[in-house]
Length: 151
Length: 151
DNA sequence: AATGAAAGCACACTGGT
DNA sequence: ACCAGTGTGCTTTCATT
Image 1 (cartoon, rainbow over the protein chains, first blue to last red):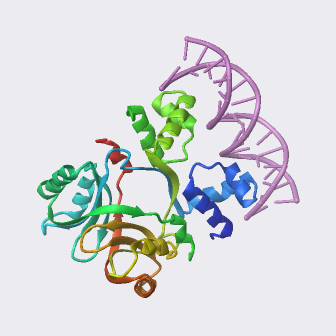
Image 2 (image 1 turned 180 degrees about the vertical axis):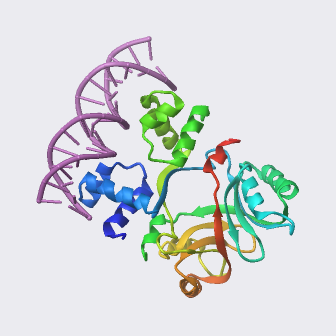
Image 3 (image 1 turned 90 degrees about the horizontal axis):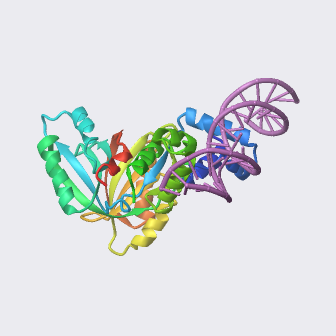
Protein backbone atom coordinates (compact mmCIF):
# COMPACT_ATOMS: atom_id res chain seq x y z
CA UNK A 1 0.00 0.00 0.00
CA UNK A 2 2.60 2.55 1.09
CA UNK A 3 6.08 1.46 0.07
CA UNK A 4 9.52 2.95 0.60
CA UNK A 5 9.24 5.23 -2.42
CA UNK A 6 5.90 6.57 -1.19
CA UNK A 7 7.50 7.22 2.18
CA UNK A 8 10.32 9.15 0.53
CA UNK A 9 7.86 11.21 -1.47
CA UNK A 10 5.80 11.97 1.64
CA UNK A 11 8.89 13.04 3.56
CA UNK A 12 9.87 15.37 0.73
CA UNK A 13 6.38 16.85 0.57
CA UNK A 14 6.29 17.35 4.33
CA UNK A 15 9.40 19.49 4.01
CA UNK A 16 8.09 21.40 1.03
CA UNK A 17 4.64 20.72 -0.36
CA UNK A 18 5.26 22.88 -3.42
CA UNK A 19 8.01 20.78 -4.92
CA UNK A 20 7.23 19.86 -8.51
CA UNK A 21 6.75 16.28 -9.64
CA UNK A 22 9.85 16.70 -11.73
CA UNK A 23 11.94 17.67 -8.68
CA UNK A 24 10.54 14.76 -6.70
CA UNK A 25 11.30 12.40 -9.55
CA UNK A 26 14.99 13.25 -9.41
CA UNK A 27 15.10 12.37 -5.72
CA UNK A 28 13.46 8.98 -6.04
CA UNK A 29 14.84 8.12 -9.49
CA UNK A 30 11.52 7.53 -11.20
CA UNK A 31 9.85 9.43 -14.02
CA UNK A 32 7.92 12.58 -13.17
CA UNK A 33 4.93 10.79 -14.53
CA UNK A 34 5.05 7.90 -12.11
CA UNK A 35 5.72 10.27 -9.24
CA UNK A 36 2.63 12.28 -10.12
CA UNK A 37 0.58 9.09 -10.17
CA UNK A 38 1.89 8.07 -6.77
CA UNK A 39 1.30 11.44 -5.16
CA UNK A 40 -2.21 11.63 -6.55
CA UNK A 41 -2.86 8.15 -5.22
CA UNK A 42 -1.54 9.04 -1.76
CA UNK A 43 -3.82 12.06 -1.71
CA UNK A 44 -6.86 10.19 -3.00
CA UNK A 45 -6.36 7.40 -0.46
CA UNK A 46 -6.26 9.88 2.40
CA UNK A 47 -2.72 9.15 3.58
CA UNK A 48 -1.93 12.73 2.66
CA UNK A 49 -4.83 14.66 4.13
CA UNK A 50 -3.95 17.99 2.58
CA UNK A 51 -1.25 20.32 1.40
CA UNK A 52 -1.29 23.49 3.38
CA UNK A 53 0.60 26.66 4.08
CA UNK A 54 1.60 27.01 7.72
CA UNK A 55 1.71 30.47 9.28
CA UNK A 56 3.96 31.79 12.02
CA UNK A 57 1.74 33.47 14.63
CA UNK A 58 4.71 35.29 16.16
CA UNK A 59 5.49 37.06 12.88
CA UNK A 60 1.85 38.18 12.76
CA UNK A 61 2.22 39.77 16.19
CA UNK A 62 0.66 36.91 18.14
CA UNK A 63 3.60 35.89 20.25
CA UNK A 64 1.65 34.71 23.29
CA UNK A 65 0.56 31.10 22.88
CA UNK A 66 -1.53 29.36 25.52
CA UNK A 67 -2.75 25.84 26.12
CA UNK A 68 -5.99 25.45 28.01
CA UNK A 69 -8.07 22.56 29.26
CA UNK A 70 -11.73 23.50 29.11
CA UNK A 71 -14.74 22.17 30.97
CA UNK A 72 -18.23 23.09 29.86
CA UNK A 73 -21.21 23.69 32.08
CA UNK A 74 -23.54 20.73 32.49
CA UNK A 75 -26.24 22.30 30.35
CA UNK A 76 -23.89 23.31 27.52
CA UNK A 77 -24.18 21.83 24.03
CA UNK A 78 -20.82 20.44 22.93
CA UNK A 79 -21.57 20.53 19.21
CA UNK A 80 -22.64 24.14 19.45
CA UNK A 81 -19.50 24.99 21.42
CA UNK A 82 -17.32 23.51 18.69
CA UNK A 83 -19.19 25.45 16.05
CA UNK A 84 -19.03 28.76 17.90
CA UNK A 85 -15.31 28.31 18.54
CA UNK A 86 -14.62 28.93 14.87
CA UNK A 87 -15.60 32.54 15.34
CA UNK A 88 -12.95 33.05 18.01
CA UNK A 89 -9.92 34.01 15.95
CA UNK A 90 -7.42 33.43 18.78
CA UNK A 91 -8.23 29.71 18.85
CA UNK A 92 -5.79 27.98 16.52
CA UNK A 93 -6.53 24.33 17.30
CA UNK A 94 -8.65 22.15 19.52
CA UNK A 95 -9.48 18.57 20.42
CA UNK A 96 -12.18 16.89 22.44
CA UNK A 97 -10.62 14.74 25.13
CA UNK A 98 -11.53 12.21 27.78
CA UNK A 99 -11.04 12.86 31.45
CA UNK A 100 -11.67 15.65 33.84
CA UNK A 101 -11.99 18.29 31.09
CA UNK A 102 -13.96 18.28 27.85
CA UNK A 103 -11.61 20.03 25.42
CA UNK A 104 -8.05 21.13 25.05
CA UNK A 105 -7.51 24.31 23.06
CA UNK A 106 -4.53 26.24 21.72
CA UNK A 107 -4.61 30.04 21.57
CA UNK A 108 -2.39 32.57 19.81
CA UNK A 109 -2.74 35.99 21.39
CA UNK A 110 -1.14 39.40 21.15
CA UNK A 111 -0.79 39.86 24.90
CA UNK A 112 -2.24 38.72 28.25
CA UNK A 113 -5.04 41.24 28.01
CA UNK A 114 -6.27 39.65 24.82
CA UNK A 115 -6.17 36.20 26.38
CA UNK A 116 -8.14 37.52 29.32
CA UNK A 117 -10.78 38.86 26.97
CA UNK A 118 -11.01 35.52 25.20
CA UNK A 119 -11.39 33.57 28.44
CA UNK A 120 -14.14 35.92 29.54
CA UNK A 121 -15.89 35.46 26.24
CA UNK A 122 -15.68 31.68 26.48
CA UNK A 123 -17.25 31.81 29.91
CA UNK A 124 -19.98 34.31 29.20
CA UNK A 125 -20.95 33.31 25.66
CA UNK A 126 -19.86 29.74 25.06
CA UNK A 127 -20.86 27.85 28.19
CA UNK A 128 -17.39 27.31 29.61
CA UNK A 129 -17.29 26.53 33.32
CA UNK A 130 -13.63 25.92 34.06
CA UNK A 131 -10.34 26.82 32.39
CA UNK A 132 -6.94 25.41 33.26
CA UNK A 133 -4.37 27.28 31.20
CA UNK A 134 -0.61 27.53 30.89
CA UNK A 135 1.73 29.40 28.62
CA UNK A 136 3.59 27.81 25.74
CA UNK A 137 7.30 28.54 26.16
CA UNK A 138 8.35 27.06 22.83
CA UNK A 139 7.48 24.45 20.25
CA UNK A 140 9.52 21.28 20.00
CA UNK A 141 10.48 20.69 16.38
CA UNK A 142 9.12 17.28 15.42
CA UNK A 143 9.40 15.85 11.94
CA UNK A 144 5.94 14.70 10.93
CA UNK A 145 7.65 12.03 8.84
CA UNK A 146 8.22 10.17 12.08
CA UNK A 147 4.73 8.82 11.66
CA UNK A 148 6.02 6.71 8.80
CA UNK A 149 8.76 5.05 10.76
CA UNK A 150 6.63 2.25 12.13
CA UNK A 151 3.69 2.39 9.76
CA UNK B 1 3.32 44.77 5.15
CA UNK B 2 0.53 42.20 4.81
CA UNK B 3 -2.40 43.67 2.91
CA UNK B 4 -5.80 42.31 1.96
CA UNK B 5 -4.50 40.63 -1.17
CA UNK B 6 -1.77 38.90 0.80
CA UNK B 7 -4.40 37.70 3.25
CA UNK B 8 -6.48 36.28 0.41
CA UNK B 9 -3.46 34.50 -1.01
CA UNK B 10 -2.57 33.05 2.38
CA UNK B 11 -6.11 31.80 2.91
CA UNK B 12 -6.06 30.09 -0.48
CA UNK B 13 -2.69 28.50 0.23
CA UNK B 14 -3.84 27.27 3.64
CA UNK B 15 -6.62 25.39 1.90
CA UNK B 16 -4.33 24.01 -0.78
CA UNK B 17 -0.64 24.79 -0.78
CA UNK B 18 -0.17 23.32 -4.26
CA UNK B 19 -2.38 25.80 -6.07
CA UNK B 20 -0.49 27.34 -8.98
CA UNK B 21 0.35 31.01 -9.17
CA UNK B 22 -1.85 31.15 -12.20
CA UNK B 23 -4.85 29.81 -10.29
CA UNK B 24 -4.21 32.21 -7.42
CA UNK B 25 -3.95 35.10 -9.85
CA UNK B 26 -7.46 34.47 -11.10
CA UNK B 27 -8.83 34.61 -7.55
CA UNK B 28 -7.19 37.90 -6.63
CA UNK B 29 -7.32 39.50 -10.08
CA UNK B 30 -3.63 40.20 -10.45
CA UNK B 31 -1.12 38.78 -12.90
CA UNK B 32 0.42 35.40 -12.13
CA UNK B 33 3.68 37.23 -12.04
CA UNK B 34 2.75 39.58 -9.26
CA UNK B 35 1.17 36.76 -7.30
CA UNK B 36 4.38 34.76 -7.49
CA UNK B 37 6.31 37.75 -6.21
CA UNK B 38 3.92 38.24 -3.31
CA UNK B 39 3.92 34.60 -2.27
CA UNK B 40 7.71 34.47 -2.39
CA UNK B 41 7.86 37.62 -0.29
CA UNK B 42 5.44 36.17 2.29
CA UNK B 43 7.60 33.09 2.54
CA UNK B 44 10.87 35.02 2.74
CA UNK B 45 9.48 37.30 5.45
CA UNK B 46 8.44 34.32 7.59
CA UNK B 47 4.70 35.00 7.63
CA UNK B 48 4.34 31.71 5.79
CA UNK B 49 6.60 29.39 7.74
CA UNK B 50 6.38 26.50 5.31
CA UNK B 51 4.31 24.60 2.81
CA UNK B 52 3.76 21.13 4.06
CA UNK B 53 1.92 17.92 3.35
CA UNK B 54 -0.23 16.87 6.29
CA UNK B 55 -0.70 13.18 7.01
CA UNK B 56 -3.69 11.38 8.47
CA UNK B 57 -2.42 9.16 11.30
CA UNK B 58 -5.66 7.15 11.31
CA UNK B 59 -5.19 6.11 7.69
CA UNK B 60 -1.69 4.93 8.59
CA UNK B 61 -3.16 2.67 11.26
CA UNK B 62 -2.47 5.04 14.16
CA UNK B 63 -6.01 5.73 15.27
CA UNK B 64 -5.29 6.18 18.98
CA UNK B 65 -4.26 9.75 19.71
CA UNK B 66 -3.27 10.83 23.19
CA UNK B 67 -2.46 14.12 24.88
CA UNK B 68 -0.08 13.99 27.82
CA UNK B 69 1.33 16.47 30.28
CA UNK B 70 4.85 15.45 31.21
CA UNK B 71 6.99 16.25 34.21
CA UNK B 72 10.68 15.46 34.20
CA UNK B 73 12.75 14.31 37.15
CA UNK B 74 14.67 17.03 38.93
CA UNK B 75 18.00 15.85 37.56
CA UNK B 76 16.80 15.53 33.95
CA UNK B 77 18.23 17.69 31.16
CA UNK B 78 15.39 19.40 29.29
CA UNK B 79 17.38 20.05 26.13
CA UNK B 80 18.44 16.44 25.96
CA UNK B 81 14.85 15.31 26.51
CA UNK B 82 13.67 17.40 23.57
CA UNK B 83 16.40 15.99 21.38
CA UNK B 84 15.76 12.37 22.34
CA UNK B 85 12.02 12.82 21.74
CA UNK B 86 12.67 13.00 18.03
CA UNK B 87 13.55 9.33 18.04
CA UNK B 88 10.17 8.38 19.48
CA UNK B 89 8.05 7.99 16.35
CA UNK B 90 4.73 8.04 18.21
CA UNK B 91 5.32 11.64 19.31
CA UNK B 92 3.76 13.90 16.71
CA UNK B 93 4.05 17.27 18.43
CA UNK B 94 5.19 18.88 21.63
CA UNK B 95 5.53 22.16 23.49
CA UNK B 96 7.30 23.28 26.62
CA UNK B 97 4.84 24.87 28.99
CA UNK B 98 4.71 26.76 32.25
CA UNK B 99 3.02 25.39 35.32
CA UNK B 100 2.90 22.12 37.16
CA UNK B 101 4.22 20.12 34.19
CA UNK B 102 7.18 20.72 31.89
CA UNK B 103 5.86 19.60 28.51
CA UNK B 104 2.70 18.75 26.71
CA UNK B 105 3.01 16.07 24.04
CA UNK B 106 0.73 14.57 21.39
CA UNK B 107 1.00 10.88 20.51
CA UNK B 108 -0.37 8.84 17.61
CA UNK B 109 -0.46 5.15 18.48
CA UNK B 110 -1.74 1.93 17.03
CA UNK B 111 -3.35 0.71 20.24
CA UNK B 112 -3.20 1.09 24.03
CA UNK B 113 -0.37 -1.43 24.25
CA UNK B 114 1.81 0.76 22.08
CA UNK B 115 1.06 3.81 24.18
CA UNK B 116 1.95 1.82 27.28
CA UNK B 117 5.30 0.92 25.75
CA UNK B 118 5.99 4.54 24.90
CA UNK B 119 5.15 5.76 28.38
CA UNK B 120 7.45 3.14 29.87
CA UNK B 121 10.21 4.21 27.53
CA UNK B 122 9.78 7.87 28.45
CA UNK B 123 10.08 6.97 32.11
CA UNK B 124 13.00 4.57 31.88
CA UNK B 125 15.07 6.24 29.17
CA UNK B 126 14.10 9.89 28.99
CA UNK B 127 13.93 11.05 32.57
CA UNK B 128 10.14 11.41 32.82
CA UNK B 129 8.74 11.40 36.34
CA UNK B 130 5.03 11.99 35.88
CA UNK B 131 2.55 11.58 33.04
CA UNK B 132 -1.00 12.92 32.97
CA UNK B 133 -2.63 11.59 29.82
CA UNK B 134 -6.03 11.54 28.20
CA UNK B 135 -7.39 10.27 24.92
CA UNK B 136 -8.22 12.49 21.96
CA UNK B 137 -11.81 11.83 20.93
CA UNK B 138 -11.71 14.01 17.84
CA UNK B 139 -10.11 17.08 16.32
CA UNK B 140 -12.06 20.30 16.03
CA UNK B 141 -11.72 21.68 12.52
CA UNK B 142 -10.26 25.16 12.83
CA UNK B 143 -9.39 27.32 9.86
CA UNK B 144 -5.82 28.50 10.32
CA UNK B 145 -6.79 31.60 8.37
CA UNK B 146 -8.51 32.80 11.54
CA UNK B 147 -5.11 34.05 12.59
CA UNK B 148 -5.39 36.74 9.97
CA UNK B 149 -8.70 38.09 11.17
CA UNK B 150 -7.25 40.45 13.75
CA UNK B 151 -3.65 40.63 12.61
C1' DA C 1 4.27 47.22 -7.28
C1' DA C 2 2.37 45.73 -11.30
C1' DT C 3 2.22 44.22 -16.26
C1' DG C 4 2.78 41.56 -21.03
C1' DA C 5 5.63 38.83 -24.07
C1' DA C 6 8.21 34.93 -24.84
C1' DA C 7 11.37 31.17 -23.59
C1' DG C 8 11.78 27.29 -20.80
C1' DC C 9 9.45 23.97 -17.68
C1' DA C 10 6.02 21.26 -15.72
C1' DC C 11 1.61 18.94 -16.09
C1' DA C 12 -2.16 15.84 -17.58
C1' DC C 13 -3.20 12.60 -21.16
C1' DT C 14 -2.79 8.88 -24.14
C1' DG C 15 -0.84 4.87 -25.40
C1' DG C 16 2.48 1.30 -24.87
C1' DT C 17 5.80 -1.93 -22.39
C1' DA D 1 3.58 -0.29 -11.90
C1' DC D 2 6.31 2.32 -14.98
C1' DC D 3 7.69 5.25 -18.95
C1' DA D 4 7.73 8.34 -23.47
C1' DG D 5 5.56 11.59 -26.33
C1' DT D 6 2.44 15.33 -27.06
C1' DG D 7 -0.39 19.32 -26.42
C1' DT D 8 -1.54 22.48 -23.07
C1' DG D 9 -0.78 25.22 -19.31
C1' DC D 10 2.44 27.31 -15.86
C1' DT D 11 6.56 29.88 -14.27
C1' DT D 12 10.17 32.90 -14.90
C1' DT D 13 12.91 36.60 -16.74
C1' DC D 14 13.08 40.94 -18.67
C1' DA D 15 11.62 45.28 -20.48
C1' DT D 16 8.28 48.69 -19.39
C1' DT D 17 5.03 51.64 -16.80
